[in-house]
Picture 1 (cartoon, rainbow, N blue to C red):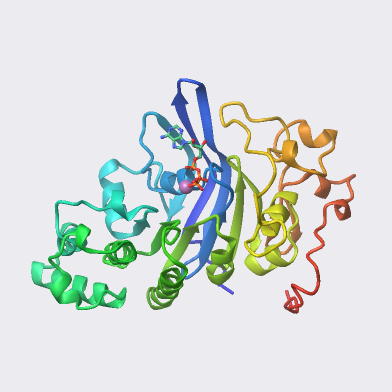
Picture 2 (picture 1 turned 180 degrees about the vertical axis):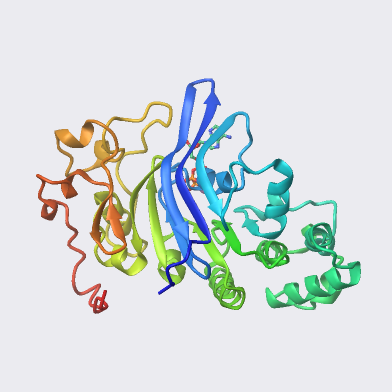
Amino acid sequence: MTPDTDPLLEVANLRTTFDTDGGELVAVDGIDFSIDAGETVCIVGESGSGKTVATESITRLVKSPPATVTGSVRFDGEDLLEASEERLREIRGYNIAHIFQNPQEAMNHCYSVGWQITEALTIHTDASQEEARAKAIDLLDRVGIANASSRFDDYPHEFSGGQKQRVMIAMALVGDPDLLIADEPTTALDVTVQGQILKLLDDLQEEFDMGILFVTHDLGVVAQIADRIVVMYAGKVMERGDVYDVFDRPAHPYTQQLLECLPGTSDSIGGIPGSLPSPTDPPDGCRFAPRCEHAVADCEAGGQPREVEVRPGQAVSCVYYQSGYDASVVEADTGDAETSRGVGDD
Ligand SMILES: Nc1ncnc2c1ncn2[C@@H]1O[C@H](COP(=O)(O)OP(=O)(O)OP(=O)(O)O)[C@@H](O)[C@H]1O
Ligand code: NI
């Protein structure tokens, strides 16, 4: 357990909206989460839940306008939403690194990968070209690019998809970031390469004591890497907690359904019935209520239910956990055979 120190990143009441022709689109609607050094937090949720917008709001990568970002994002004691654009550029190049879902888009085709990796280092530190080159080659080697020194001057198109993703990781890690934000970094890759990259992130995390914020809708990946999990739905947090607790005893019906849709389980085909509500016109009450088999009238009134802690560190935003309701109605039957692992001494 981490001692009682401030988290590395503390996001509070983060709200990101876009001005669209259809009106104000609320992509992220007042969410909170934190990450400690050395910890991996996964944000999960269906497509369109606001995962990417939330993570890109942290260093204000979302374009403004049309985006408006409010709330607070404290990183190492500094509020990034108050920081100047110049300061943010410095932070992005050095303290908080991003790996984007699509390496094609994030890389510049006109420059060699070596140049692209070293650029951040030469801009943000007083490293010489030679030092930067040596570090880049070391990183390329460590992310598993064979013959790294001879590939330094190759251009992006000379690398396969999996290699490009590794190059992206090298690029992200060159400044020894304190926080790595990885948005579906392995989705496009085959399972073997995906496994290698997850292992690599894990190794590097241990070495650098990096915090990792990892976005995915693949709960299999979450199971491999997460310490804690934040379940997002339609711009809101539905549930959060230690990954073992949430997987063993998911409290929110949405989390339960997500877990039932894991590949290999009986309901995995087709996903959760229904679709996300309109982000320009979200429903009253719990955002998930229109798709929830347990919903009662109170689920469809007021705002998203306030979060209730169901066990230390695990909190859920569901009417059934409010006073006057019987949470056993929604409590998951996770099937003891599948989760026979002993619940620790928490
Ligand atoms: N630049 C933008 N302008 C307007 N709306 C946007 C913009 N970027 C994202 N959105 C909207 O914000 C909502 C959240 O999108 P976001 O990309 O964060 O979802 P996500 O959870 O990352 O989904 P996925 O799993 O598909 O990546 C969606 O309704 C999306 O259409
Ligand atoms: Ni996304």
